[in-house]
Each structure stands twice: as C-alpha cells, then as structure tokens.
Amino acid sequence: MLETTTPLRLCVPPSVNIDAILRERLRAEPDAVLAEVRRGDAWEPVTVAEFDAQVTAVAKGLVALGVDPGDTVGILSRTRYEWTLLDFAAWAAGAVPVPIYETSSAEQVHWILANSGISLLVVESDANAATVASVRDRAPMCREVLVLDPQDGGAGAIAALTAAGAHVPDAEVERRRRLATTDDLATIIYTSGTTGRPKGVELTHGNFTLTALNTVADVPEVFNGQGRAMLFLPLAHVFARFIEVIAVAGGSVLGHCPDVRDLVASLKQFQPTYVLGVPRIFEKVYNAAEQSSAAEKARGYFNWATAVAIAYSRALDTPRGPSLWLRFQRLFADGLVYSKLRGQFGGKAKYAVSGGGPLGERLGHFYRGVGINIIEGYGLTECTAPTSVNRPGGTRIGSVGTPLPGCSARIAEDGEILLRGPHIFRGYHNDPAATAEAFDGEWFRTGDLGAIDEDGFLSITGRKKEIIITAGGKNVAPAVLEDRVRAHALVSQCVVVGDNRPFIGALITLDPEGLAGWLTMHGKPSMTVEQAMTDPDVLASLDAAVARANEAVSKAESIRKHRLLTGDFTIANGYLTPSMKVKRAVVLADFADDVEALYSAGRDREPAAAR
Image (tube, rainbow, N blue to C red; front, side, top):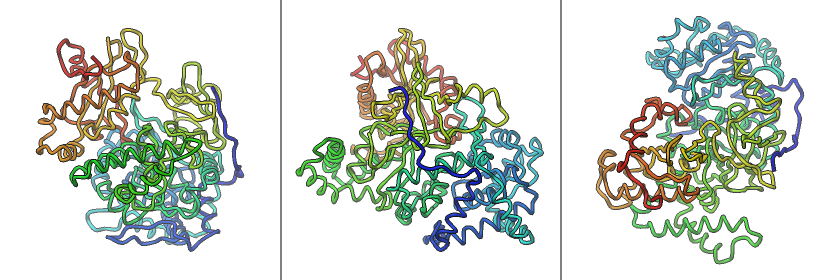
C-alpha cells in the first residue's frame, strides 16, 4: 500500500482556539482536579476553576507589562507546573508562547530570541537569566526577563505578574481569550537542530485543537476523563506540549517532574494511569529490572518471566490467543516480577505512549505481556507531535500504527514518508525557502523512510538523509542497527558509519549507570568506563550485542567492526540535541580519526558473527 487516510471524527468551528479547550473544561467540571503540584512530599490538587483563575491573573500581568495580541512570549524552564500555567496564560492574553530548552547555549538562546522576536521572557533560574543577559544586547525586542526562582528571595515571575496585573480588568482578558481563530499562530517550536541551526515551526491553534480533540475521541481507553499523566519530558519539545493540551482536553490530571533523578519517587507518589516517554526510558527500566534481579539472585526467574511476557503478548495476536498454560504462567510471573516492574511506573499505569524513535518489537511485546501497553506512535514537530499511533484495540507491535483522524500518509517513489492533514504546520518562521523545500504540493516531506502494510499500519525504516551508501553500492539505514545496539545495558550511544567505505562500522559509547548494574549482575568488581573498555567480559558482551543487532539485516548491511569511544555524547558537550538525538554530522567530523581507525587493517574489534 502506498497511501492511507483516516477520516476526521469531528470538526471544530473556526472560532475555537486552545484556550477554548480550557474554557470548555471549566464550564463542564469546574471542581474537577486539573493538576496536582508537588509541595515537599505531598501533591496538592488544583481544580479547573483554580487553574483558570491563576491563568487569568498571570494573563493580566502579561497585559500590564505590554504584551499585545500576537506578541511572542518566551518560556525557558524545566518541565514544571508553572510552565503549563504560563503557556495557558500566554494564550489567554492572545500571545504566542515560544519554548526554549533550559539546556540551550547562549547562541541558541540568542537565535530564538532574535528570530521569533520574543518581547517578554520567563526563565527558571538566575543562571538561566545570566545566559540570556550575555546575548540580550543582540536581541533588542526582548524588553523584560522574569525569573521563576530568584536566588535573592525576591518575588518570582508568577507573583510578579499577578501583582502587575491586579489593576487590569477581567474583561480585557476575556476579550483576548476569544481573539485567536483556528488559522492563527499558537506557538513557534524550534526543531532540535540535528543538521544545523534550529528552524522555527509555526503551529496554529487549529493544528492543536483539531489534533487533540480528534485524538481524545479516537483513543477513549486512555483519554477517558479518569486519566492521570505525569510530564517529565521537556515541555519545550512538541511531544510533551501536545500531551499537556490533550490532558486538558481529555479530562486528565496533570503532574510535573522537573528533575528526572526524582522520577521514580514521583511516579510512585503520583501514580499515573498513562506514561509518556522515549524508547531509551523503557530500555533503562527493563535493564535496571534485569540487573536488580541478578543482585537478588533471581536472574533465572527474571529471564523466565521475560520469556513468558513476550510469548503471552505474541499469543494475543493469534486467532486462539494465549493458552491456558501460558495464562497460568503469566499469573505466577506477575506476582514474582511484573507487579514490581509496574510499580516503577507508579503501579496504576495501563498505557505508555512512546515516541521519538523506534521501541523495538521485543521490548514492545515484553511490556504488553507485563501489563503496560506501550502505544507506539510517530510524528514530528511539523505535525504537532502525532500523525499515526497504535490504538489499544488495534496494535501491531513493530509498527507506529495507523493515521490519526484527518491524517494521511503516503510513501513516495524513493520510500520517503509524506504527510497531509490538519495537523501539518503552516511553515517555518521567517524562512519561506525552507518552507517551500519541505512540501511536495500539499504533502509534507518528513525526511523519514517507511512502508505501509495492507491494513494501513505505518512502519519507519530510517532517515532519508542518514542513508549510508557503501563503496559496494549497498544502501544501509543505520537506525535499525543503532537502536538494537543501544538497547544493551552497557551501551549509551551507537553511531553507524560506512559511507563510501568497504563495510559498515560503528562508534559506541558506554553508559556509566548501565555499566555499574551490569558489573553487579555478572559478579564483577567495580570499574571505571576506561577500565571497562579493555575488560574481556565487557568486550565479549558488546560483541554479542552487535551480533544480535546484525541478525536484523543482511550480511552486506551488518556491522563488521566497532570502536569504543572514551566519554559519552551529551547535550553539554554538543553531541546530543535537547531532545536526545545524536548530531551525526558533528560526531562524524569530531571523531573522524576513530572512523578512519575502523578501516585500518588489524585495528579494533570485529564481532564473530560478522567475520
């Protein structure tokens, strides 16, 4: 199949904007809990009416400080309750909120400030404010910078805005809340910049409202008015931002976790019913559970329980379903293993939404067998986060599901995925040339490669710009190999190389946290990453991981040699984007000598399966 479409479930009038979703929730259930905010060890509820009152108060402050309808307002902060409050307050004031990653460099901050023309910026800390101050003379449009948590003990941004807006009539905010239509700009979200300077993606109120309301109608098992969702991924990214909006639309209770080091404790306290994450998070939870079982001398039970979970999930896709014996084994395994693993997500999560990369078939079956259905989907910033998703009642593990209502997907002659629908952005901010290049008529060029099966399920096979062509003319999509290698507990990152080379190679970095657990699991003494790079057992395990990854491809596409790098790829050292994607071009340029070493005779490791 070369094209598939899912019809819209519902339409919205042109007058509907994102703020209208909050106003409708206020009309329908003012006393329902919209969010819970962590205060120490307790989570304090905030009703819809209380949240709306706070939104109005902060919006009045924006008005008082000179923010006009259509002005851009910046938010530079970790994911926290105040982020969501500022987001909805900006919309209530008729403004256009622009997120900035709190890990952004001074130059990245300057580019977004200048390119989007931010007039007022709210930052989380004095350190963030100092970063802004270093470039503010080159961004004259930014006339005000407020700090959420000032170290001098003065009034934070929320209190300052509330005080500033005390004299602004409620009627002015009520007027502004109704100004934006579906065609008007709702936000500018800057891409993560894996291939160059970030581009500002212009998303409209219609992009968000149509996509969110149709998703709520299409996936009632998750967005049923009884859900609880914890946000911990960056709200500067479109994925978490969309979940923020859809949680309000779908009647969910929102929680926020600013620091991933507190995530496990926060999940156990908050007890979400659905979790959003990226594949790496689910891989780490699995690896940690496996390592914990080894420490408790129960690795045999864990391996058996893993096999049962995967077999049970696979049986769900057969006409007869799981056998009575398999159901009994799963019940027994639940008490030993599965219940503890579900407890890592708070104990009440039935669903998890995964995006940002392929999860892998084995992990998908494992989690479904455990009792957490991972709803894997696909999307980009340019399509307001999701374009396709597996449904609880229609899942094909290994795929990214079928299109959401109103969305269409097409496979071009060269295998590129093209998208069309009301979720597609209107263009790149102040960049008509890039906008024109991104479209083939009415179809958006994703840059991703994929296929559509006979039932309309979409699968992703790689990135068009990342296709490697070996010296022998073989086209290789590196993502398949990289994702499989990275699933190993010892591995942090994997970059496959081989353009114009005689064979495929890989650069690998070790995960310090994964290393510690792996050493415990295998009864080995503690060692540094540098020591591990020469340890025979570590190297043998990595060889086996590469060999397993090679099972997914032909011999010509397989990794023949791999090389360990000292250190890791991080946001801080410039090798990862804020959304945790590897900047491939930067890695290849900075580690050119390591790549060259892979192709020097007698150098580096060659897995036995690839010889």
